[in-house]
Length: 263
Image (cartoon, rainbow, N blue to C red):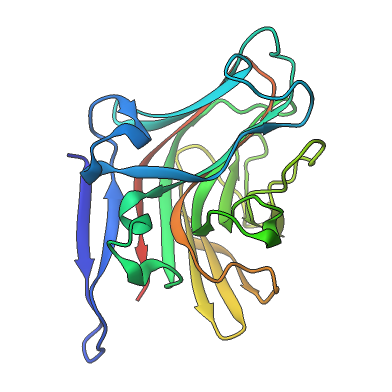
């Protein structure tokens, strides 16, 4: 079925209920990610598309699709005439339905991780930038994030060969700027990545702050203790997709998603 649900118990001597680890290798019939049967279900309930320049987005102006296709997850944005010169910024979170529907209520606000492997990316500098990444502590809406989704996103920028850690999916409205949320750890230094790498982000809530760890191919490349009053204090793991630009088609594919609680 392409989905594996494992149960991980506490370490010996610890008393806590088992929590679920969710994995998806996307090896199923070609279909929209959110249209698969319930046992393979994902939801998109976070963020939403908007544009930086008029006219406003309509079904004829731009669309994005997240499809299971040939064993990978294909994330695509397209713009079509007559408005293919508009600068579009679709911004969306996807999360496994099992977390959202409370099948594992201990996940909301629990220490958690999210990870996947980058397979392909057609990003180029300037007008064609796909910024996706595994995300944790996803929130549907919070006034601290100007009405857009909250959470921590470990973002991949193929055009720069870098990864960065951001808090929040970004601000809404016209002329919102290109920054996807508040950048907590910029790219550069150890924060580099390329197509083929595996990205992982963890969030460990503690009294007064969240510890957020970033990994590339299993190696920690960045960590921060976020004590901001705007930090998310609850939420779920998932995938974030942000697109910035105006090409006819831009696409990234990913594989072997995994998410769940940390001990």
